[in-house]
Length: 136
Image 1 (cartoon, rainbow, N blue to C red):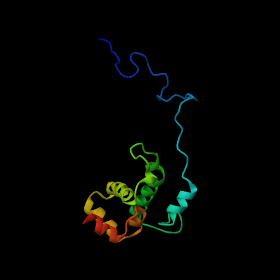
Image 2 (cartoon, one colour):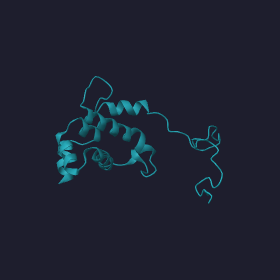
Image 3 (tube, rainbow, N blue to C red):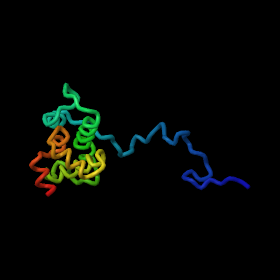
Image 4 (cartoon, helix red, strand yellow):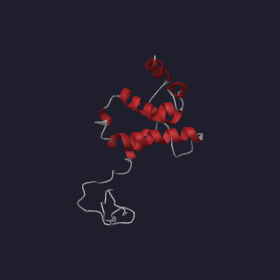
């Protein structure tokens, strides 16, 4: 009884031990996204300072960095979001709330964080008056 491969490579072993081509095609259309636009970082950093003298607890800092990364890297490059910068502020806040929900576990916990109006709420674009109006 012999072993027959029926995976991606068929009967032939992969050309590269780790499956990664050490010499990628130079004509490949993929180009990695540029690093954060300095002007956009400064604009965002006026809302909530990150990476400076301000100190936050570990959970708060994780949420702040995740929101910043979402705003400056993920949302603008995401194929599922047509034009991040053209979206109205309310829609952008709802996307950010979805990111935050992954950290806190539930909508009640999320609402509590946003109603406090602390750095996480400010970074997400929420103010206590907005939270009460939009969740009512």
